[in-house]
Image (cartoon, rainbow, N blue to C red; front, side, top):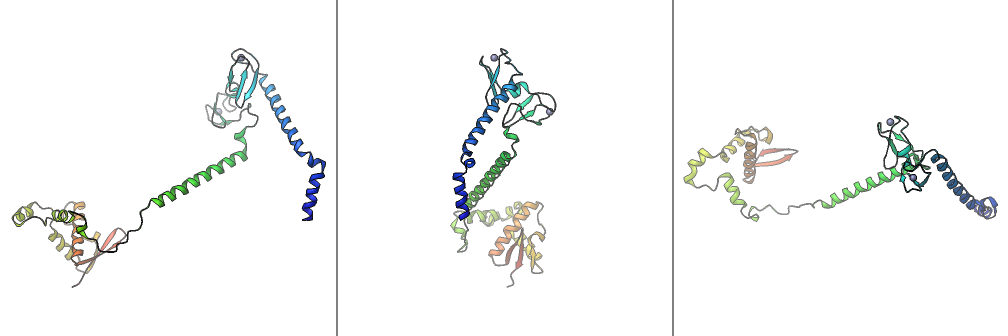
Length: 255
Ligand SMILES: [Zn+2]
Ligand SMILES: [Zn+2]
């Protein structure tokens, strides 16, 4: 503590420290004057392309003539060091129009693009922004997820109007006896055939869905028929179904 007090005391009384603020102001004035002088010398080599008048810097990347002409001196007077050709202005720097290599401008007193610290800072800010955006997106997606669906009671087919009729129609159970012949010849799906096929495949008690051979020629359709038959068989408590990854284990329930 006494050390800090003495430092503070010294800061208040040391004439060098006391005058530091004024030194700073002096330095910035000097820098300003140097900048003006630097541009004055640099531009003295060039003339206004319109009236051959004298040019002065009037802003970053801009010089002007008393005739009213204003333009970017880097683009007008500087050629690329690599290919000796026209430069192109990008957001923060100039590049060679032929090989796209960055060329520092002679007409920029504080060339920001080559300020490593400035660039590090910009990159850090950009990364932080991207990270924040990603986190916001994850949060948004998490919030949009639907909640869990606890099945507290057995699904009831009657709760969906018309579902039973549609299922009956799908398996041909709504056809009356007179159409049986037509059904036999035209039908592509006979659940009884699929049922016996599945039962014969379950000789050893259990089998994976993928290991049951197809009955029809259309593999995709056959898969659907086998699956529908299994659902009905499970409903009849003939078999038990357990899902393992993308397959179903079918187990025969012994009666
Ligand atoms: Zn002019
Ligand atoms: Zn080049």
